[in-house]
Image (cartoon, rainbow, N blue to C red; front, side, top):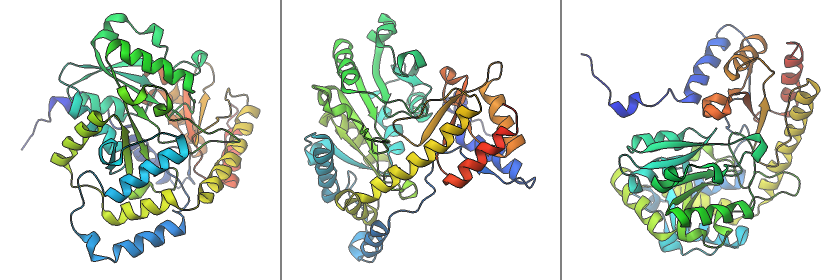
Length: 388
């Protein structure tokens, strides 16, 4: 039998990273040694003390039952404590914190709580694809805010059409940014708060990379801006900070009404995160953070190898202050997709085409710092042989 898929699915492009996986395996099947700098998935294991915490918690039968929909009270209190220590942001754990099955899940479900069919949502471009996709799946209309190099890859709020601003229901921001690795300061966040107040917008902040800062850079939280909690919700994750991508554990914090709306949606759709994983998450947030510092140094060293190598090849790239991504301009006269395919087919190096993150990403590719320094240096050597 033939079954017709829903119109909402026809409005979505193929998921970017699924397509990259297909192309990578196609080249690997030909016997090519692949160096994968495509998907942002940490290559290092979760720190041992977190694993030990999980094992101990999983052995307790009390964790084997359904978890609370909004998360364990202890985990939410731990998140509130972490936000206070890290950012100086005060949160009421019971009403302003919710546990997520990874931040992607929460971001994807959030529009179902507040976006009605036809509502416009301001989304950055280039950007993590889930912002646009979740808007479409909720019946909303994504309106792109181009992130340009000349503006530090921040959206130009003054360039947003006034009618669009008045009609928009929400705005999504993401700093430190995926894919551009750009960062934002509290001055920019203050402008976002003012803009949201003027036009009655919900601000959705994705801060998944806040702990991946280099040298002495430490990213602020959107919620540090005065009045931010009145207009916004922030999504965070343990995935990148503690090498826990497969564990699926994150949190949303901020405005109690926004957190409550997300909680209402989740109670209808999922049954919460495994309690043993949340207990391990408490260990991650509250234990000594030296493992986080070690990861920062490791990624910084990898960044330095890759950036120096790309610059030596004559490619236009700036060393990022945060994230484990490098955003690199492609050579003149070559599209993002063409450049990506050349690197994959002729050098066995996987990257991600910038236009896969949105139209404004054309002219760039993203590299993820997900192999060790030696393999990173080898990737640069392979690129050098291409005569870029």
